Image (cartoon, one colour):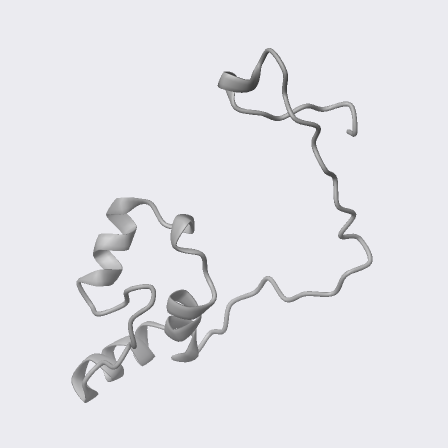
Amino acid sequence: MKQTKIYPLTQAETPEPNEFINLAELVFNTVHANDFSFYDELVQEEPAEALDPERAGQLASIGIVKGQQFAPDDRMRKILERAA
């Protein structure tokens, strides 16, 4: 694995060395919540780059936008709680 080289094509002539980080000993949760807090996780914890423009647009249509407070009204909150 450490022989693998990943770099932009523009660096093909002289690629920078890759840094491999061993995460085997770290404990972290990769499972999202299955209640309303799931939506807060989408806004606060996921990097903006994790979403393609189409999905980001769908979330924005219900008020989920990175860097903005997610404050759905009671009607929307009930819908999202049921969906979660």
